[in-house]
Length: 476
Ligand code: NAD
Image 1 (spheres, rainbow, N blue to C red):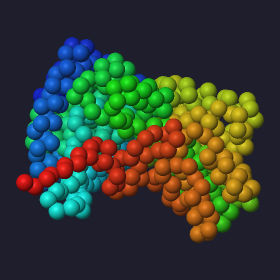
Image 2: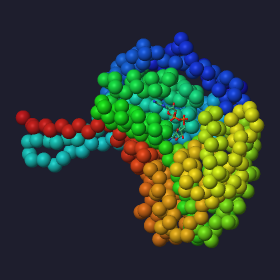
Image 3: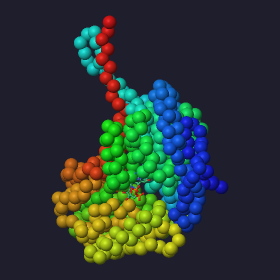
């Protein structure tokens, strides 16, 4: 039987206990399942020294050797999938089948990045005889990374994969609420023979750790996934020290449903995807703009499917949607739903907390939601779908682009003309047509506007972890 891991810090290649800790809560029953260690200043100082040493070794390790270690670690995680998925479900709440998919996705990030690290090609610039201009892509240095709680394993995997493939060392502060995913990644890298100091894992009070680490000399890149508000703070802090950032921030994804698709099929697919991870996904499809001829049938089918979703403990067979990850999300859902209803939205499914033990909230569907409702502009980050009718594509585009966010956007249409027009006009880093998958390992993922800066994954992903060095070499 799989067990929840004994949580520790990992600094300079060694596991380390801490004098104090914070409880880790199972969101399905609110029991304490572990204690996450809180790093002290001395631990952080040790991590900085270790990462600086690790960088010296790793940046001079052959890319093929780096890829070999990364692939070995990914293979170990694949072998340990049941153990990792169990821990993720326990600490986060998501159904175990979704936790398994998350582990596979995390491994795919490592595998893609490992291969991509072999292709950080430079170039030779044509020059006059006697001199050579050579452009190199060198590892940027020590990375300070901060990953959130919604995907305990695949979120840290994004950042660790990018950093390690590029030859950087990294200090990652993973989410205190869901620490086991990152802990399992580190364990796999330790077992795969990663040199000490290349990967360091800390936990603690998020603001204290980021404020301490970001200004420190060896840190050369700040990578964060989380809310726009925190992202802005960390970007300001990095800016004061002229350090680049990689920011994956909030979204509020629009879905444009054109009048040439099957409304029932599209609604069912959308409802299932909306409730994945209990809606706690930065790319979660949230604002549905449906062309009027399909509207009533779409809304009916969506609400019917949402009501049929089984909410329960993620470890139970047959659970489609687990609890929300923490009590903050319950409060946010209650506030947004009450506000929208008070402003005239129609509640068609859910709308309330389920039971009083565990953070369960019913899959919720609101239709005819006025623009003034807070949910239309604040990212719900929960199982809440907002459906509104639109007359034209222009109207849909204007509404889709109305927010300061631009992470993921979706459309359903069989018309090449519609698809092309929407792809041109939509303001988002990722636009998916007839699919609600926003990104895979081989595609670049990231936002525009206040959804962030930079891309993870794809051929673009490693560029943030490298710096360009131009070598001008006059031959004697
Ligand atoms: P939050 O903004 O307090 O925290 C989000 C994440 O950032 C957490 O993992 C937290 O540990 C970390 N964090 C917070 N303050 C930090 C700091 N000063 N330095 C470093 N890290 C810090 O909000 P929350 O209540 O945990 O989450 C809710 C909101 O966060 C959501 O509405 C959503 O917008 C956003 N979020 C986004 C993603 C994403 O994938 N983009 C993931 C999780 C949360």
